Structure formats: structure tokens, C-alpha cells
Image (cartoon, rainbow, N blue to C red; front, side, top):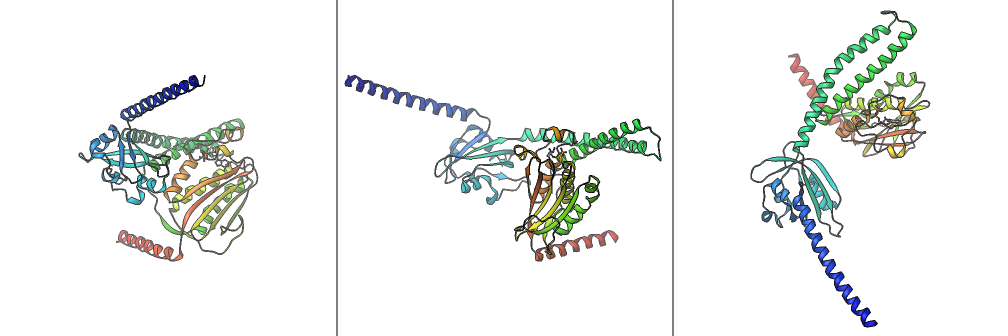
Length: 414
Ligand code: ADP
């Protein structure tokens, strides 16, 4: 009996072993096959930065043979270029960063140059570290030339279409305004009701076209921010105060406050502290107006509060309301293009779903960050973070910019 058991066990383990090695071999074959057949270029970069494995698509992308790629330092065969066609510096090279931080990374802004042809192929790169203690990196390169071409064509179409449609919509809006004005037209009560609805809809359409136009321009990098040093408390206050008529028209309260970050949020309080940052004033105006208009729109009753707070390194601009709030699971989505929270309350409030997308694009273009905190039913807080600059830097940069502006004015006068 025991012999049987033993023999059986021996049999079983050898069968298991051969099964295991067979399945390991077939898995390896399968892995090899997958790697050979996929369209994306794939390499495995060891912790020392040397290429351990590459697939044929990667060879095609770089114009190198498999033997040329074997065990060479990745940077000697991958020439990564930024948008302007310059070589990406070491500190911004995503593979280099991932080798140091051992973290997942992705980048869609780079080009890769083939060895022989000097052909620059735009790629999207995804870097995944393995789970070893000293991880290797699996790096995939997807050729996005066709994708970018289609995106460009799409945005050109949207941009032309919105531009063309904005003009007739503005004219419809103008004529509706005249029809609703008792000094230029006579309309009965029911007619007025219809006209008001049409006016609202045409304004919505006008806003949509303007937002679409701005989105395509920002996406294409057609609008670059003009950064200049500003007294950020004074600037934010003047923009926010400009919204007082809209806030009070809705019957809401308004508070503006400034202070340091370790204080409790203090709407209405002011600490005499000069705080400077570098921003594009027009971008910041668009961003603040959009956030405050949203705060008004999504707040049936209560307050709109704007605070500027600072520590030694950063400036926070906070726009807060006591409105309907955003459900937790929706918070990360609200900055996406065309995303609108879909519930009973928001359905009744018009919108394009592009406002916050544009806000985020503009904030990031100014080297800032933005995020939202909220509790459904209690209100929403949007927080923007910008690097603070010292008073000395402010004065130097201001002096330089003011001089330049004065000179260009003189040249024009002349
Ligand atoms: P919209 O034109 O729909 O207002 P946005 O991009 O500005 O588009 O905002 C996206 C969505 O985020 C809105 O549809 C709304 O659901 C939500 N949202 C934005 N701001 C607020 C706010 N202050 N309070 C509650 N919800 C908000």
C-alpha cells in the first residue's frame, strides 16, 4: 500500500513536474508570440538601464536590429525629443525618472528618432516597473502619428465650425434682445415668455461655441500663457469683487478673505500680507469667473466665499460655496471634457461640461494645480495652488517687464 502510494506519488510529482515545465515552456512561447506580434514597441530595461529584451516593433521604431539593442544602455539608442524637437533633458526623461522612483509613468508628448532615417515618430510611452526588489521596467512605445493627425483634423473642424456658428448666434441673441426690449418692440406676456426661453437657449449656444473654440485652442497649444508677477491677493480680490452683482442678484452672500495657510478658512478676514505669484492675468480672470459663476449656479441659497492663503512656498486660491455639492464618486471626473454630474438638481441647471476642463487646462498652463473637495448637499470647495514668489523676485521681474512694455510703447509712438 505504502509502495503504491509512494510510486503513485513519484509518478504524480514527475507528471506534475513535466506538466509544469511543459506549461512553463508553452507560456514562454506564448509570451514570445505576444511580444512578437504586438504593434507597440516594447523593451525591458534592467535596473542598470541596459536593454534586456526588445520586440520587432521596437526595432522598426528605432531603426535598430535586435542584436544592436541587446544589453546596451537604453539612452544610447532612444533619442527622446520634446514638442519643440529638442532632446528631453535627463531630469525629465520619463524612463530615467521611473528607474529612480521605481514608479509607473506615462507620457504622450514625446517623439522618438529612428537611427538611420532621422525620422521623428510621436509616441505615447507607458512605463511599468516589475515587482522585483530591484525592478526592471517594461516600456511600451505606441506610435501616435495617425492619432495626432486625426485629432488635429477634428479640432480644426470643431474650431472652424464653432467660429462660423458663433457669428449668427450672436446676431440671433442681439435680435432677441431687441424683441424683448419694450422701447424697441411690443410683445405680449406669452410672447415675452417664449422670447426669454429662446434668449436663454441662444446664450447657452453662444457659450458652448466659445468654450469649444477655447478648448481646441488650448488643446493645440495655440494659446500660450503670458506669465507676469502680480500682487495675487489684490488681483483675486478685484476679479471676485467684479462678480458681486451676479452673486447678490441670486440672493447669495459674499465674503473675501486672505491669510496664511495655517489659519482656519477665514472668509471676510484680512491679514496685511503682500503675496506675489506669477500668473497670466487673463487666464486667472477666466478661471476665477468660471469657478465663481459655477458657485452661483449650483448654490440655491447661502454663501460664495473666496480666500487667498499663503505659506512660504505656495499660494492657495479657494472658491467655496454652500450649494448642492458634488457626490464623492464624481469628484475626480468633473474636470473631464463634457462631464456633467447627472442628477435631478443638475439636470435643471444648464451647462456645457467644458468649464472645469478649461479651468484645469489654464491653471496647469500657469504651473498651478487644482482640485475639488465637496460633500453632497453641503457645498463645494475648489482649491488652486500656485508657486509663491518672493518680493525681490516680484520687483526684479516687474521692473524688467514694465521696462520692456514702456520700450515697445515708445517704438509704436515713434
Ligand atoms: P457646466 O457647464 O456643466 O457647469 P463645468 O465643467 O463647469 O460644466 O462643471 C462640470 C460639472 O461639475 C457640472 O456639470 C456640475 O455637475 C459640477 N460642478 C461644477 N462646479 C460645481 C459647484 N460649485 N457645485 C456643485 N457642482 C459643481
